Length: 112
Image (cartoon, rainbow, N blue to C red; front, side, top):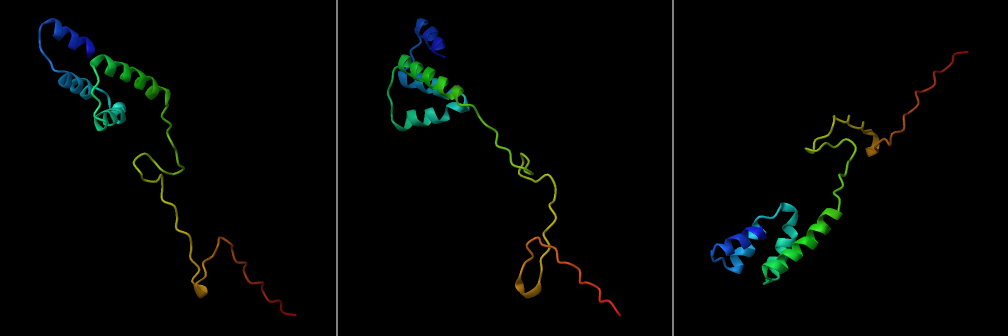
């Protein structure tokens, strides 16, 4: 982008530094959003060469940080589960819930 601005300058096209800065910032990828917000919030008034140097250092930092995909068991990308999980059975006796323990069947009474 800096090359385009230099070419326009050679053709005697007058572009203000503010317009040139905005053109450069608007042409950046989404991965530079935090840099753009920081630049605008602090009201930085840098030359195009200084902005170019700042962007080169930010680019190195952006690509050093690798994105990690977090995976959870049973959760797909769209937020829906892989399948329905059957509901846990509830024990309605005295308000106690079963904690996964199976009750033993009563022993048959033996006649003698």
